[in-house]
Image 1 (tube, rainbow, N blue to C red):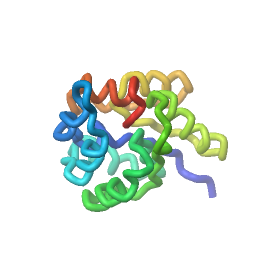
Image 2 (image 1 turned 135 degrees about the horizontal axis):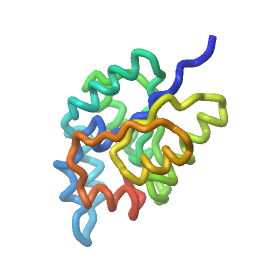
Image 3 (image 1 turned 180 degrees about the vertical axis):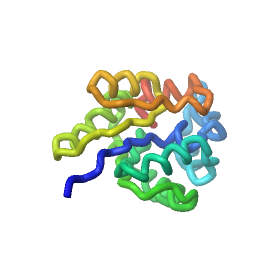
Image 4 (image 1 turned 90 degrees about the vertical axis):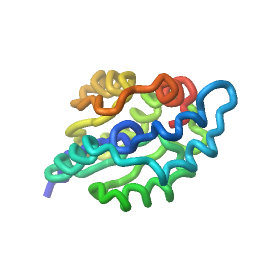
Length: 161
């Protein structure tokens, strides 16, 4: 039996509303510990949850996030509490500061090398979406949460989420 294609789904800005914790990383004094400590309080983005549910019907779900590995327990509990489809959670190493567009490609390449087919990537970061498209993978742009310059900088320039 052949494995179903992967639905690669980002978390922040796709299924998790992180806007309430962005103030921790605005300006020069970034408080990353407080930023990530707020994960349990992230509201669910209904649009992203609906997309995840729909895709889970005929894809294997792979949550691919720029969140650091040290936030795994909070992230897994958050996913379960909100009843999102089960799927593998892939996170960046704690000291990996590469831009999200680089880190996520490298992490996803491991699955492709193992013979998995990427059916769709759902992400809100325009640079990640462009990089995924350049690899030939179908992309659904998650545009249901207003983009933030703070989140863009964290994902791309600081390599932190």
